[in-house]
Amino acid sequence: MKLRVSKYLLFNVGCLFFSACSTSTETYTFTEHVSPIVFTKCATCHRLDHAGPFPLTTYQQVVKRADAIKFVVNAKMMPPWPANPSYSHFLSEKTLTAQEIEVVTKWIEGGCLPGDTSTLHYTPTADAVFSNLGKPDLILKMPHPFLLKGNSKDKFYLMKFPYELDRDTFIKSIVFVPGNRKLVHHVNGFIIQYDEGKKKNVFDGDWYVDTDSVDVKTGYEILKLANDDGTYPMLTPSVCNYLPGVEGVMYPNGIGGFSIKRSGAIFLKDIHYGPSRINQFDSSYFAVYFDSKPPKRRTLEFQLGTLGVSAIEPKLVIPPNQEKTFSTHLKIPIDISVLTINPHMHLLGKSYKAYAIKPSGDTIPLISIPKWDFNWQYFYTFPQMLKIPAGSVVWAIGTFDNTTKNPNNPFSPPRTVAERDGSMRTTDEMFQFIVTYLPYQKGDENISLQPN
Image 1: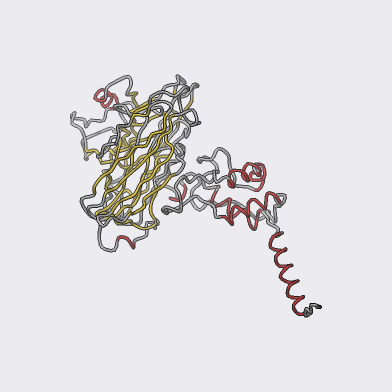
Image 2: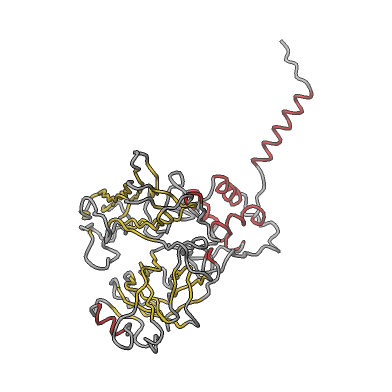
């Protein structure tokens, strides 16, 4: 039997074939296809004075690293975003879609064609240092670069950043900007507020003191934190925290923030530097964002686990050559609206998961981190406020790997690792879950947390 095929059908089959071929062999250029991906997903960190170890803000810089870029994006090592996006979503997720990975890969395999780069210039959406928050209203710096001696020991300091303003005012956000990202481990910041006439010179006294060499009371005296009459001023609750990889958080107008007196200081009750074998310097500073109005809704915080309000079960002791899982939980007494969450472990961390169980038995997924990365610990902010009803139980579950298979294990051979009293060294362990929230108001779950 002879098969009859119309010319019309052959024409259409030919068109389909040509279309498929043209799609699979599409030519990608840096200017048209790749730069929008690199500039929005990579250059936010890989730019001058930011977290990335090298810049990716020009065609030449990207081509130089092309093979490495192809590897890390296909292995999903970069951009760094430890949270599993199929479990829960957050603002500013640093992930690439399958299509974006394909575009970058085919561009590199196709010879890294530049396109017309003559008019292509990287223009960050905000100031090159302050990520998506924009340029700050005030910067508080150290008086000079701070020497960190290379004695291979963790270092803990009390430190102050004094200021004098024209008047009392309101602050929307304070962001800590680490000068030495390799050594700054964590920062817990507060604000000292001096009433008018109580302190003639807020800049008097030392700016830092080593807490391994003196007790806290003596340290306060060396820093001259007291009022001139010897009494101590008001201390605002926690206003700024930092962990490796953390970026500043700013909420929409009316949410968060606080009022401050014109004279005061950002006070670090604890700044921790990791060990180094060589002398290094730090020039960390604070970026301060003012607000024209007082906050309508002040944020609150609770902390599970280490140094928090809930016990770790079993006790956080990780024997050598073992993987071990721990949990901690807290029953929520009132309806709350969750804004931001922060999981925290150290070098032995392997995986992390947190969720809430409602009184009905339903699960509210909070975060899943299948592969813990000590170097990237974010304040994860939800796209909208997340309601957790009264009576719900918040759970955090963490697995630690204290074996030779863990490349980040600080000890060889492995040894028992646990918490300790006081400030934790990098080689100690912690298991925390910090929740920033508001008392729930009707309609909160519909409010976007994207900054105005």
